[in-house]
Image 1 (cartoon, rainbow, N blue to C red):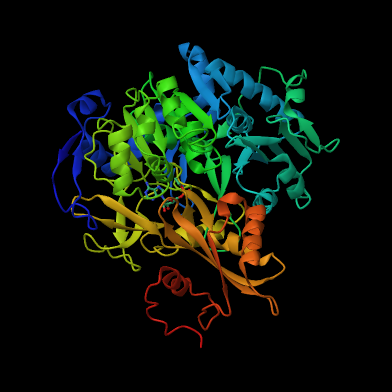
Image 2: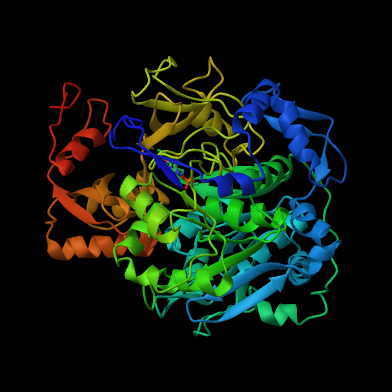
Amino acid sequence: MDEHKKKGSSPGDSQCLVYKPTASVIEGATLKEYEVLYQRSISDRLGFWAEEAQKLEWFKGWDRVLDDSNKPFFKWFVGGKTNIVLNAIDRHVLTWRRNKLALIWEAETGESRTYSYHALNREVCKFANILKSMGVKKGEVVTLYLPQIPELTIAMLACAKIGAVHSVVFGGFSVEALATRIRDASSRVVVTADGGFRRGKTFELKSIVNEALKDSPTVEVCITVKRTGQPVSMEADRDFWLHELMALPIASMKCETEVMDAEDPLFILYTSGTTGKPKGLLHTHGGYSVYTATTLKYVFDLKEEDRYWCTADPGWITGHSYLVYGPLINGATQVMYEGAPNHPYPNRWWQIIEKYGVTILYTSPTAIRGLMRFGEQWPKRHDLSSLRLLGSVGEPINPEAWRWYHRVIGGERCPIMDTWWQTETGGFVITPLPISPLKPGSATRPFFGHEVAVVDDQGAQVPVGSEGNLVLKAPWPGMARTIWGDPERYKETYWKTYEKQGWYKAGDSARMDEDGYFWIIGRTDDVIKVSGHRLGTAEIESALVSHADVAEAAVIGVPHELKGHAIHCFVLLKHGRTGGKELEEQLKEHVSHQMGSLARPEKIEFMSVLPKTRSGKIMRRVLRARALGQDVGDTSTLEE
Ligand code: WTA
């Protein structure tokens, strides 16, 4: 890449350099003209999406590309019949791709497995038949709680194939988080494993499920993958081992793919919001297939011969869209890795890139910062020359980490796709393409079909360089359709603020610079991104309050060098209880047990009073200022 010393491009970073793609990147890229295609995608948005949708298989074509008669409940490819599996597997096994590798999986333990598209199809059919034999019906929600193993991908595809709706709960979550999600989805069937491996140790899953099931009356069946071999308690008539089921004649290798309406639910994925319980965001077969396939193909310029590696866990949206569905629809060969990036040594990832000849690496700023800490000598021991494109997602990437990633991992030749998007958007929204000039720390410009703006609370565009709310002005096929069981909340959360204009409010603050590049600052609500993982303060607060000694709690995110943000808790104890080091440890343990270790608080402060407004709302702004040692600002609404 050539560096162009164009100064002052970022409002916050006057030293910002623009990185222009090299001639060979431009030469090799499928897409050489952003402006022309972008303008076309805006002036004829529906035409653009229809053209992309045509590239996929449909059981029956759509009658209308977009139905916006009941805003904000948009419908895409109305009347079309499809199934995401038709595009992710079925169409590939009819061609030479049946023998192409779909998945190369490796575990921290060194164990590895590969699946061709043919093999993946076989396993998915078998799994789908098992689900059917357990009485799983079209439209029913199956909860998946698994480590990062191929069975998770297979289970997701098996659900989709028979028209069941999957709800993946990240394996790092724990009892209460899991139980809440199972209950909200009224799942009858749960799929899990005895445990998983991380950092040379095993962790438990089935025992957590057992505990969660005490509070989940709807569950009748639990299918368990034997992964670690650790002893687990199995209940007769409810609990089954997957390998035993797979050996039965019911697990036949033939299974028809269910014909789904384009708008039929594909999955729900719970994510944290401002208040109360987590929201189950719903995605559908048609629009989501088109959106994940198109975004991945253009942004990562995915080619037949690529070896693509997305390090995300399928338990998060990145895993759903860009580890499971997007790559498979595109017929790609991908790598999946279970384990920590630095175990047993900080070269674990670089070793994998060299071993499998990875050409595209998509990961998070937290991972990059974490690996950067160990120094250049670790990546330098490996031949990383197969890499041609890099990606980043989940939180803003600080320019220092960007430059390290670009120079040390990308050898100054690989452009970095800093992709901004959300569980709600289903796929990339603001993102570079391989041909884009890049500015470290900026997700650059909108993807095709998107008009994005930074506005004030009334909806007026803020001046260039000023901070404001990020809004998306037009619908797109990958958008979440609703919140499971709570359409009002969907309307309220995302569409209420700019109801008059009909814009989607992202919940992020951002700036736009004079080149039209977007710089994401962070969440404006009570969502905290800890190591790129999305957590809600409300869930952590209720975990704290479930402890016998706690009366009230308030949780905020404070900037953290490695994790992006860390969890900081303010706790008011019940009358007569006193805080101290011991109780602090106990509370941290308690939150880990209830929510999962990813939600373990960094710090707990015991308070004699929590700052509240007269109407009783906790003033997190005041707490944040206190935690950061800043001026508290205007406190005129603070209760005496
Ligand atoms: C943040 C993850 C800056 C943002 C795909 C968003 C980012 C939230 C970026 C969604 C990025 C994601 N730069 N911030 N490239 N990507 N975010 O639902 O705050 O887990 O609103 O989806 O992550 O988190 P979610």
